[in-house]
Image (cartoon, rainbow, N blue to C red; front, side, top):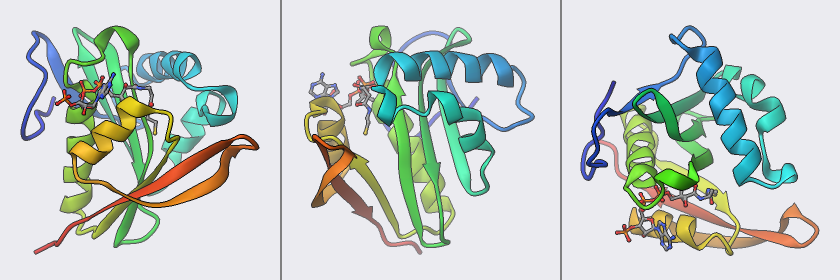
Length: 167
Ligand SMILES: CC(C)(COP(=O)(O)OP(=O)(O)OC[C@H]1O[C@@H](n2cnc3c(N)ncnc32)[C@H](O)[C@@H]1OP(=O)(O)O)[C@@H](O)C(=O)NCCC(=O)NCCS
């Protein structure tokens, strides 16, 4: 289990793992994530059906926070080039929200990207997702542009980005 830098949730049995195909409990963790995915995201935004295929893709990372072995939240990211990465998924289970899980996951993904010498992380977020918008802004993401009909015919997205110098 890893402990990300900065604020971490103050609870017993909390930890974060990077999930790989050969991780212990892979099937159980994926099953839990898919269940959360179905509850949290509308169908057209959900990776529930394709989750396993997504994480098998090259250049894709998945971090998962757990409390007593139960999945509390997860973040997925990918790096299509050596300089650029995207956050493709972030969710925290409803009963574990507002306890620092989302922030810890996002910080950990940012650290992973930094360690790969990536210069920019971008993401898309529905502007009505206030909690997510606030979290991204808190960690320094800025709004780049509004992408109309990104999710569906009546749902737009902000594209946001975070740049950092790599030494
Ligand atoms: C967005 C989400 C991941 C945040 O997870 P979380 O564990 O509850 O967030 P944290 O407790 O780490 O909060 C970190 C920051 O996020 C913001 N935030 C979180 N929940 C918030 C809420 N309900 N209202 C306003 N701001 C909120 C705050 O800036 C907070 O910092 P603070 O505690 O100093 O105020 C969670 O709400 C979620 O899963 N939402 C549904 C899925 C989603 O929208 N995913 C993003 C898709 S792009």
